[in-house]
Amino acid sequence: MDTPTRKPLDRHVLRSLLSEKSDFWTRVDVVGVTGSTNADLAEAARLGAEEGRVLLAEEQVSGRGRLDRRWESPARAGLMLSVLLRPTLPRELWGTLGIAAAVALESALREVCGVQAKLKWPNDVLVDGKKVCGILAQAEGGAVVVGAGLNVSLTAEELPVPEATSLLAAGARTLDREEIAAAFLTRFAAEYRTWQEQGPGPAVARWERNSDTLGREVAVSFPNGRNLTGRAVGIDADGRLRVDPGDGAVETVAAGDVVHLRPRA
Ligand code: BT5
Image 1: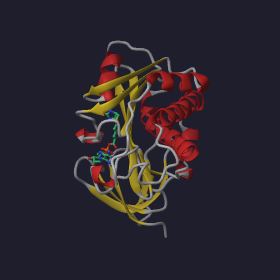
Image 2: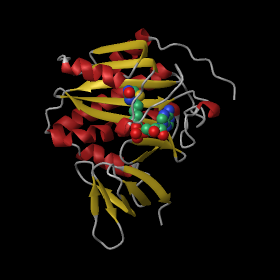
Image 3: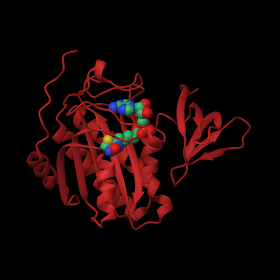
C-alpha cells in the first residue's frame, strides 16, 4: 500500500464543524508533537483547568495505554486526542466514561465512515476483530481525562501490532480527520450529558448492544498475574465485566485484559 497523503489537522475547520454541532467543547487545541495528550490534560487538570477542553496531537512520543503500555502511531496517521471532564457523579462511576467514549466512537464510525465497529471490554473499538481504537480514562485532580487513539490512515506495514487495523485498511468511505473528530466529539458530548443526568445505564446498554465480548469464551488476565477463563455474560452498571467460568459462580472483573477465545456459541 502507498503511504496516503496526510494533510495536517486544520483546527479552524475542526472548531467550526464542532461549533455547528456542539457547544460543550469550549477550547480545542492542536499541537504538532507532544509526549501524551492524556498527560498534558492531566497536568492542566491539576492546575485547575475547566471541563470541556480538547487536545489533539499530530504525533505523540510517549503515547500511553493502560498499565503503562504504549500507544504508537506515525505522525498525522491517526487521531490522538484527549478531553477533560469534571463529572459530578460519584467517583466509582467514572470508569464508565471510557465505555461512553467507545459507544460515541462506534456511532461516529458508522455514520461518518460507513464502518461497522464492535466493542471489546473494557474500552477497545474493533473492526473485523482487530483494534482500530484504544481508549484510556484516567482520574486526575478531581477531573477525568479521556483519551482516544484512532488509527486512520495507517498502512498495513505501519500497524504496530498484528491485532491492529485502521480505517484505511477497513475501507472507510472517508479518512477526513476533522470530520471524524467532530463527529466523535459531538456524540461524546451528548453521551456525557446523558451520563451526568441518568448515570451510566444508557451508555452501558448501548455498549452491550454493540459488544463483541458478550457471549464469548474469554481469557482474562489480571494485573496481579492471575488468569480466568469463562463466558462473558454481561457488564454491571459500573462497567465491570461478568464472567461465568462454567460452574455458575460468576465473577465480576474490574480491571484486566481480555482475549476473545471463540465466537459466540
Ligand atoms: C489502550 O491501551 O488501548 C489505550 C490507548 C489510548 C491512546 C490514546 S492516544 C491519545 C491519548 N494520549 C495518550 O497518551 N493515550 C491516549 P491498552 O488497552 O493498554 O492497549 C495498549 C496496547 O495496544 C499496546 O500494548 C499495543 O499492543 C497495542 N497498540 C499500540 N498502539 C496501537 C495502535 N496504534 N493500534 C492498535 N493497537 C495498538
